[in-house]
Image 1: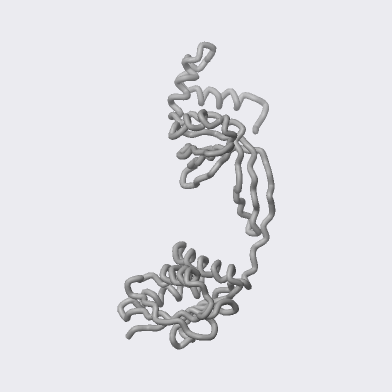
Image 2: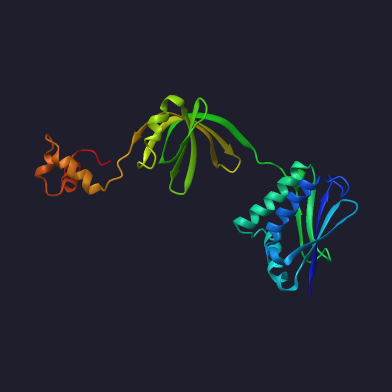
Length: 248
């Protein structure tokens, strides 16, 4: 049989004064949380606190129950956790709390702390000169600042630079790995994670991403290099190191 769920918003709007657009944001977020969108239907709003009643079609009940249980037990995946956080953020902005429950209110129950959530301590801003490596994938600017997007593996950063550097930076688009020098503004969360909020470029260097064998060949071909006469320059360096007095 079909199963009914309720989502209650406490301490904020009533059904008579909740803005339609805001209700739409909650419903969209609920749809993302429940999943199985073709089988979850809005039924009604209940008087008193704002209570959304939703019906889940029989065929989709096990999947929706499993998703809600994952949230309740703290085992939600990244996408599901993001949907939960979205609803909690809406409640926090509305100075409210919330809950989801099945029709019995006992078997499945998920709380949203909303305004009661304790925010982790954040330290910063901390400004420090440093470097960032990455490949340029975006250069744009409509004012006195150029915005530069770089990729370092799976991580993206958005950097800033003076407009005078715009043409130089545009020439680096997809040109290979670049090391940017500049001033970074960092924040540190209570769990020790560092978050880069701003990085202003004051210089850069193109990095050589060629193979090590090519670098060795360049050194061998240098006019003053002794490596041209060595069969294995790395072994020779190791032997010289072993003959020295230092063991470090």
